[in-house]
Image 1: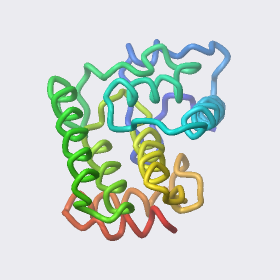
Image 2 (image 1 turned 180 degrees about the vertical axis):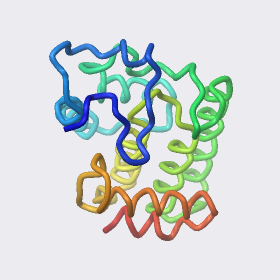
Image 3 (image 1 turned 90 degrees about the horizontal axis):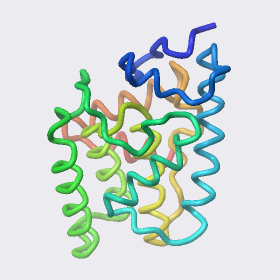
Image 4 (image 1 turned 90 degrees about the vertical axis):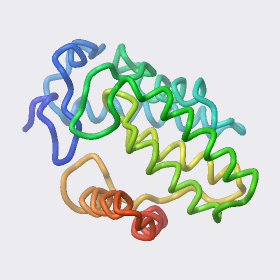
Length: 194
């Protein structure tokens, strides 16, 4: 069994200061941490899907992250200040998030992309920015779901599997993200509906 801060396959490692932000004191295993986060995320999904939300708003995105992780992490909803092996430099997070929100607003207003592609593009760009210490993929997937639902579409299925554990659907998701990094969004769009 892995300790709570051992990084899983392709997971973002936390800095010691970020690890100190863990709220529950009884967590000793990664599985326990994942379960606590998942319960918090389910509660946030009920709240977020309970009525129409303006996903393309920075305050909302930060609040959504706080709702998804706020029972587990003190830093939930706060942009990271540390550098990562992925994502933009921390000083670029706020302007890059604003640019993404402006772009996505334009895409919606001008029907630039089909709804699935628009939501997946939004998801990919948000993951690429990597604004928070952790939970960026989960936040980005929920935000994409909220975008597609707001456009009267069905929520994505995201491989119908657990994307927190190594292998299987997670590997397919990471591979599709890498394809999107190389400007081919079709595998990620297909995965989102698989």
